[in-house]
Length: 86
Image (cartoon, rainbow, N blue to C red):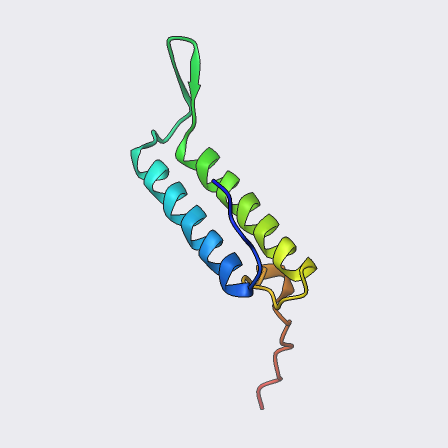
């Protein structure tokens, strides 16, 4: 699979494809990691963890290519200080 990543929309499309594939795999995956004939079978958590890492890398590459980020990290959200109640 070769992807031309020339525009921000290409990165968005890649992220959407990656997410769709991971969701399909996660639906079929067991809750716990298992082994079938000595071969490891990924759990739902393993698949979703790999998806998160892939999406972070896609976002980083998008930003490094000079485009706006396509995902906002939860840690990057501005912190709002609560106002005192009168």
